[in-house]
Amino acid sequence: MSNDPTHQFLVNKIVPIEIGGIDFSFTNASLFMVATVGAAAGFLYLTTSQRGLIPTRMQSVSEMSYEFIASMLREGAGSGGMKFFPMVFSLFMFILTANLLGMMPYFFTVTSQIIVTFALAVFVIGTVILYGFYKHGLGFLKLFVPHGVPGVLLPLVVAIEIISFLSRPISLSVRLFANMLAGHITLKVFAGFVTSLSALGALGIGGAILPLIMTVAITGLEFLVCFLQAYVFAVLTCMYLNDAVHPGSH
Amino acid sequence: MFVTAAYAQQSTTTEGAEAHDAAAAGEVHTETGVAHEGEAGSGVFPPFDSTHFASQLLWLAITFGLFYLLMSKVIIPRIGGILETRHDRIAQDLDEASRLKGEADAAIASYEQDLAAAKSKGHKIADDARESAKAKATADRTAVEADLAKKISAAEDRIADIKAKALADVGAIAEETATAVVKQLIGGTVTKAEITAAVKASAGN
Image 1: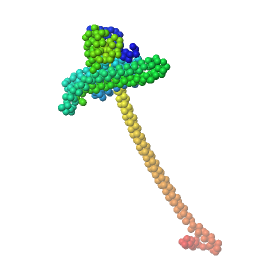
Image 2: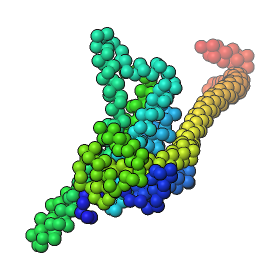
Image 3: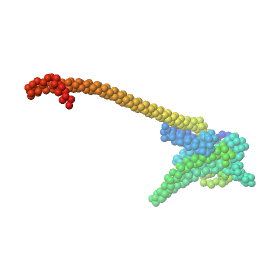
Image 4: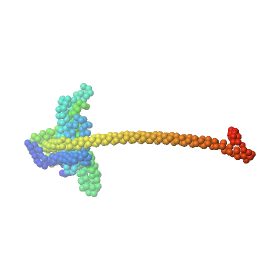
């Protein structure tokens, strides 16, 4: 059972809760969501509690993540998009911390659940749509009508634009989910080779070196992917928010 | 694709959640078409196991909502404040530095001005001293020259006086000498008038 590479994604109830016939149990996924929030908020809170004029190392990490997201959002959505800074910053820190926590052995990876990444993506796209209509009214629909397209092609182009807009929450959520899922399965499979090969005796132990090296290398790669996927999610969020702030600009 | 399937799944589960659990799980994932390698109860590939979707969504909403609030109310204002303070402090220090540099420049300028003034004053004093020394030397020289000229003329007067006196005595000596000579040579006497005439005649030569 424990060799099953998908076992790590199982959701187990810790505290069963049922409201109106719907299962809202506190599960291991919920536990790690709480842990993610606790770790990320705790780190940011404690490292900045000195409010040092000259930052300590840990305080510069917090400041760097702040400035990193701030410059990303300013480049992506202009100064008009800065009102979304708390949202993008929260998304980035939450996803990054959830990804990194998931790299610990025996820890649950919150972002390997499609429903979690999909909910985050819907949150982003929902914000884009709501803010777009709130700010520009029907002018937000100019998003689907690019400038300088000949009249004949316009219906086709508009259809493509609408489809690409609708596929955004799916691509945004599946990208993060699939990366985390595939990475963890790969790690588990290679690590499983090490144990099963070394059970075969001396020759097996010799042969287990190769998957061991692979496991170490993939672990390094996965840490990169953890950061990269959080970054990609944040960058795409900035781009989509740019559509809400400047709908007619592309 | 996953998503629509997942939603379909969720709606079926939420509608008949209680009756569902173990028995209907098999049907559910034949709809989704997801691989069967999962285990433990539902038998669905765990990430697509819709039985926990409602709980996941609720707890995500709670935890992420809390996280968002913490970020927007506490962390972001705090880090923003730290960066702002540092930025202000740097700007202030730069202002202070440029002010001090201005002061230093002014001090250098005034020092150089003082130096130039002192130099010109020194030149003036030196010139004055030279001028006055020269004037005094000239005055001394003229005084000494005048004194000398006076002494020279006095000496010349005396010489002329003495010369005149000496010349006057020469006639008397010549007469006496002539009288004595004549007496010795010729034994006679010659009148004084004759000798005087003779001396005068020879002196006239």
